[in-house]
Every structure is written in structure tokens, then in C-alpha cells.
Length: 211
Ligand code: PRT
Ligand code: ZN
Image (cartoon, rainbow, N blue to C red; front, side, top):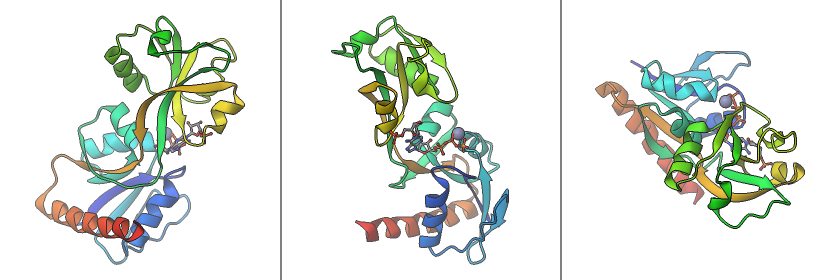
């Protein structure tokens, strides 16, 4: 019996996900272009996937657990448990508007067009603030939308803020703070749950050692 973990195949969370497993004393041979691999010293099978697909794989039980941004878990609305925050991949999902726009409060988003890759989280935010706005879902390069006349505002992930700055935008609202999390399937077999507990215990020790 092995525990199946899904991690990002390539991208911002890949290296830190592998590093965390290493720090937990788990050796995996991470061949390029591999879709899956196994740990040599822990009953762990590793799947390399696109981050967007990870919540679905966990909900379906194809993977037992996964490492993914909390922003992706919340956007995908899949039935998974967030069992541990991992302390890397930190960012925020923020509203941004053109630098020249006068912005006093969230009311200034009323009747605007907002470009985002996070329509679910954004519409919940707007509802919470009683704002009616048009959401334009786009999958990438969201920050150019105001400049080409596609939107009045954007909602995108921000870490340093330099992408917004370079595109003449200013950050005006934090919608969500996010970091990489360990997510797990609702219905784990007892053996898988025991393996998860063991892994989580090691992760917590790694985190404590860093503080
Ligand atoms: O290929 P795949 O679908 O797996 O990857 P992806 O391209 O969808 O995701 P990827 O690798 O870009 O990001 C994976 C996860 O990293 C995200 O879901 C977040 O949880 C986390 N993360 C942390 C970030 C950032 N920081 C981040 N800055 N994800 C994206 N960005 C982008 C942002 O979208 C914007 O374009 O970086 C730009 C802004 O960065 P700054 O530093 O200029 O503010
Ligand atoms: Zn993605």
C-alpha cells in the first residue's frame, strides 16, 4: 500500500515541493519529463501534474494528497481537506486598477469590467461587498487587460508587485492571502491516513526547525 501524492510538474511550486519531501527524509528520483515516480525509502508514489488539475485528482481519489496553492483549491471548489499550510509559494490575490484611476473604496469597482483567472473567488468577493461587476475570465497575461481596453480592473496573483508596476497598475484590494498547502482526499483508507499522519508529522518537524 502506497500513499499517492500529486505535485506540480513544473512551475513555481515544483522545486519547493520536491525540497520539502527531501527535507522530510524522502528520496525521490525526479527525472525530467517523468509523469510519476516512487520514493525509495517511504511508501510514496509521486504524480507530476498541472497545478489546476490537482484538486480534481484528489477529489476523485486518483491521488490521496497533493501540494497546491490554496488559491487553486478555493477556485476549483473541489471536495478536499486542507491539512497543512506549507510556508512557501506565498502570494496574494489582489484587485488592481490603472495607476491614474481614482480609487477610494471597493465601491469604485461598481459596474466595472474585471479581468481575472479566478472567476469563482472574485465573484464571491464581489457578492460579499454587494458589488455588481462584469467578470472577464482570461487564462494568462491578465495584467495587460486594462491597457488593451479589455477591462477596467484586474484580479491576479501578486508577490513582489513588480508585474503590476510594470503594467501601470496599482494594487487596491487584497482578496485572498495564499500559500502552498497540503490537501487530502476526504475519504482516505486507514492505511493511507496512517501514512499521511506520518508524513504530516515530519512536515511539522521541518517547519518547526525553520522557525
Ligand atoms: O503549469 P501549471 O498550470 O502547473 O502552472 P501555472 O502557470 O498555472 O502556475 P505557476 O507555476 O505560475 O504558479 C503556481 C502557484 O504559485 C500559484 O497557484 C500560486 O499559488 C503560487 N504563486 C506564488 C504565484 C505567484 N506567487 C506569482 N507571483 N503564482 C503566480 N504568480 C504570478 C502572477 O500571476 C503574476 O503574473 O507572478 C506574477 C506576479 O508576480 P510579481 O512578483 O511581479 O508580483
Ligand atoms: Zn496552472
